[in-house]
Length: 439
Image (tube, rainbow, N blue to C red; front, side, top):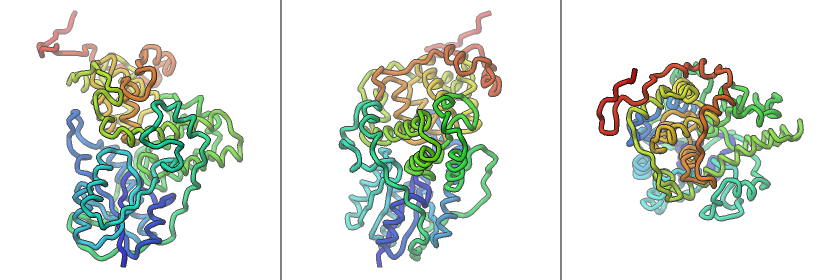
């Protein structure tokens, strides 16, 4: 009898999931495992406190939906509160596992864990699929270690490549073997607050995909995508793509169906363009590993950013001298989401107006964003800071101009009360002496 483990991560779905199909063909019994990494709930070195309530709720909804999907296939979702290396080692030592099924995750820590498991259990066959990306490495016209140094070069090489047709969900999975490990337990169905715009999980993802492409919104996406607010102004696919409850290939297939039925235009192409942007940073994280987190990024360029606790706190709370930034940050705190334009504006402010090390901003977004993914988040912060893939060496936005262009009547600012702030940015100087307000 062959026993396998499907190790879930940022891929919480059953449809378009090749590792599930492979497991069905190769093993007699199967354990479906998700490791709820302890570091998600601990303070970090960047003055953040772990996963926000919004991000935790969205994750729990995704896990619950996955558990229900697996249950319908005769399976059980097991969740461990230990880190993945400890969880898998415990399982492999107690149960005669012969196969591990995993999608390639671009994060450095995830890949190091996989390498450690492979080294410690050489007799276990590890099957690596690519369910988190549009393309597999074999489809790319370059080795991933030779990823082009800018998105534009990457896009020109890959945008005309064919993508695989999404796989349907299976009708049945191999049964669960008997085992009893106290810290690896079945997911318990529970009541989760869903009084928010975004609901995690595969069913909600498919609903949003279907709803969006049943309208004519894709025809105007390029014109509306930079709006700071409004559900219909962008696709809103990113949280489910980051969670993996929706695959990039499913989105690409829906674009193709829409273009076949309604015609292609610049806006429908731009939805694909954004998928390619996401794809670039997936392979960017894969190529650069730990350099994703260095202050000098991938360039080795020295940066001037430091850490000012008061400024960082005011930025994160939406209490800076910049009303548009404040509104965006309050929106993030309340919803766990922010528009792409808002992310660029707030990142530029933290780096260039407030003089703070960009990594503190990236870590704060990691804590807050329900659509957090390691490559897109840290790679885009590097891009704005000028230590990443931007050939122009960083993006410093004129905040007044951005306000005039994207919120000329200050409707967004007033909706989120960005105009209310402490007029004195600093209460202490560099030597920690009090700064008294000027009259």
